[in-house]
Image (cartoon, rainbow, N blue to C red; front, side, top):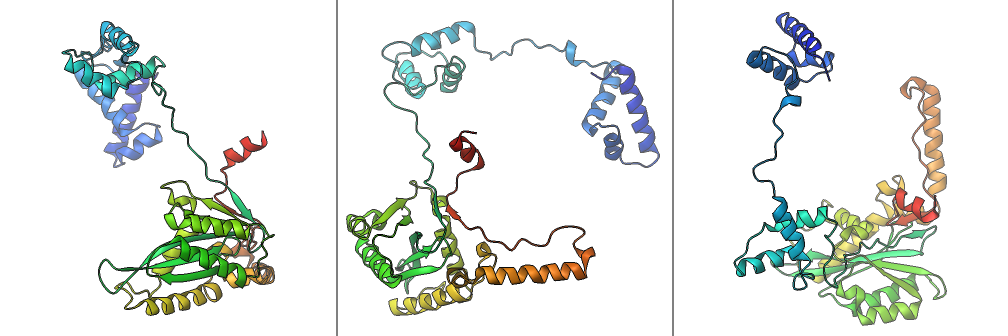
Length: 356
């Protein structure tokens, strides 16, 4: 605690600095104080003619609205009665009111139960369990696919076309797509069959297909097809869009294209033609930020290492020519990870999983 003499000296120094044109805030900062503390000390001097700290002598008596010990005992007793043992305070308090009794508010009931370590899921109900998303990884193309469905505006308000889009986790390339007039598991089933044929995939090759929890993703027809093709289905947690982040990001890229038809596509054929051009641009021309600004095709076709190594050499040559621009720092890291993760575990989860 700062002594009264030190407080008085600090106030004098700050007053002197302010009178000489200094900022009160800056003067306080030089002494390690805040303006609020400075003004509080001055105010106490005016009121009590002393710089002594008044807080130790302040009245710390119980507040008027403090819950009496008797009421606290009643809450515990009531909650332990057989008729209320399986009920929550939000049920207990109204029921007591119906019987003409008021002990305390619902929030007070909850607070007392929490303090007494009695706030648990009453009755046979269990506490909700937080389920972590499953982590998948890819070290090459055609190991993990992601897919989703998004709306494309139709010619009239309230009319939509449905874009089914499949992409590869490893290189972000779009491996399959189609636009339909409705959502259905049958359409998705047929599309994944076409994709496997196009990619030359054998049923013995492991493949994970990740999606959200929509009905086309979990329909019986789709699941049966995946089983026949030897594909492992994976679904996001209910109402958690972040479990399928790459698909969501891809849709944002699509709908922010300058030529996207925000007012709607006149026909289904027009929508399909536009998506076809988008897929061509995305796979072969779009420099993806998640791929160190390579195109998905460059990553998929194995050109990435050569291109990134060339970039590294260009940067190293520039650093050798103009070393002052880097100020001793390393050049930009152009390397790509060998393994790409979908919903990676946090560092804490990694440590706990290996037992460190």
